[in-house]
Image (tube, rainbow over all chains, first blue to last red; front, side, top):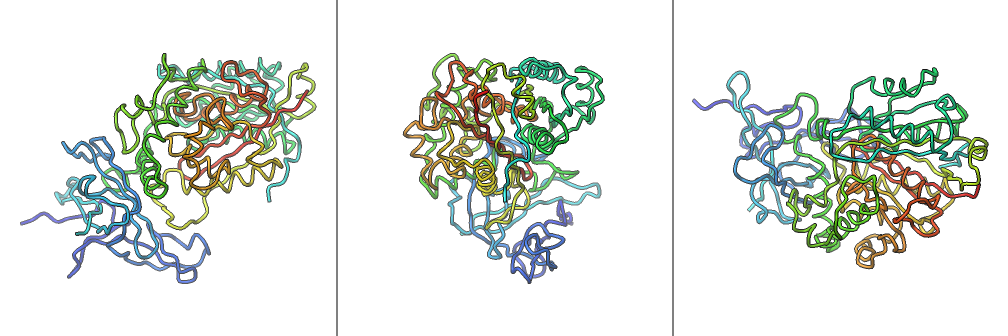
Length: 139
Length: 387
């Protein structure tokens, strides 16, 4: 039986559900200002008005990227890949997300479509697979 | 609206322990910087009415402990911490303590060793998630790749800025990185790639050190001047972020770049000067893309024109508006707490015309800018007046 996948931080994202093919980042929307945010906010930081919980779109556009030539991200090892990519992705809700990137430098072009995905980073005390999120180029 | 400081404030003394990567005791370096500043001012510690200590590492009571070495005078001793902008904020608190009438003389003292601190990219107990990715190297590298896309900036331009700052530090005996030769663009480009397009010689020098500044009222400054030119603090401004398009809440190491434009605008208004009045500038050049962008955000040139300034050599010593005259964070170093006070030290020496081989000719007005992790931007403007 496959191990159960568990988000590293369920306040930030959830796994794909039902027919969904991609996970979702958990955001806030402020109807009064029309602005959306990630991570979730207690109130709109511009108008101080109420916010509601939303699931953000799982696809966006690459705004900027880099490749870090270090083998670890926090406690996550990237083995012999020589490092890892990091990007800023603009989602349709007007939210910019910073996250690791899947792939190599040849895969990333500013302005190109990107999709949210997950990857394993270890196991929790119950033996479940811990996963966190990153973006990949959409072909 | 940024109004003029309620009372005129002057820098009457500065001191600094050489920035280094030798794991020296921060308290010992702090003592050197503090005593130097007192000697430079020509006063004893009993004349200081308030002490603001800036440090990130070292523990909760380090600042009070160091103050006890200066003397048990009973003055208020306050710990200030605002990430990389810690020393700048400690200086700002000292300035406002004098401007607001709390005391006539105040001291700001920064000390730290960046090598003994935990890095950014961690928060709370989360150590496994994607939110851990944002090392400063990654964040500023993304400023760089986006600028390359928007403006056509090249890696050579970033390397030219870094090489300039390495070479400025060659004339600064207090700098951490002092090359024994003229550093070239090719040398910077050829150093180890750490986060595309940034190489190791483009990254700021983390290390240890200490720096101090003492500020006072006009009456005190004139009494102590002995004919030496006075250095007046004509602006002391600090901001956090406001909402911008593409706002990043998690992992934006120093907040939106717009903070620099806004804080500088406040400072220019308070001082009654503009970018064209500046003779030299110190900035948070943790990576060269920052210095490049700050040329524009500080109003030295128009948006997208910073690359031309580099090509023309305008920001080198001897150029139209020298930046990072002591080597900047790139080469003078960036220990944390003392970094912003090192900028005040450098600018004060320059405005007194005591900067030796790196002296900016006829320097009368200098601007110091620091950004700090989280959401901090601080700008001070210092101006020379005859005593």
